[in-house]
Amino acid sequence: MGRPNAFDGMMHEFCVKLGWCGCVKDGKRLHVSDFIPEIGPVAEDDFARWLITADGLDPDQLNGSELRLLEAVFVKHMGATVVDANKLRPGHRDA
Image (tube, rainbow, N blue to C red):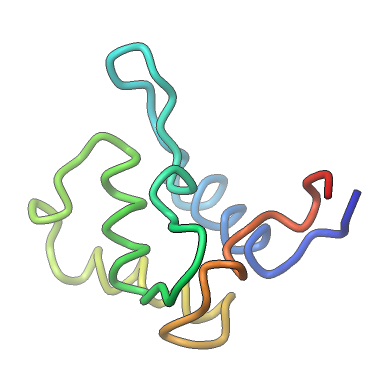
């Protein structure tokens, strides 16, 4: 079992502090991690849109300031506007 990492801290802020925890849609749990690709670059705006979608909402319906807040949280925790998808995995999961 690993230690908490930047992704864990980011997800704590998104869920516990901001309420973006995912949802249940058509009987299936949705979480932002369902949208993260296995490999490749992930930009803060893509991640923010996936986070919103995972909550059952349309990202195009949010105003720009809400979207920018989510993007800023991504950059604060991940340290860049674009990171490799492998950085977007929990540190505490079993290897």
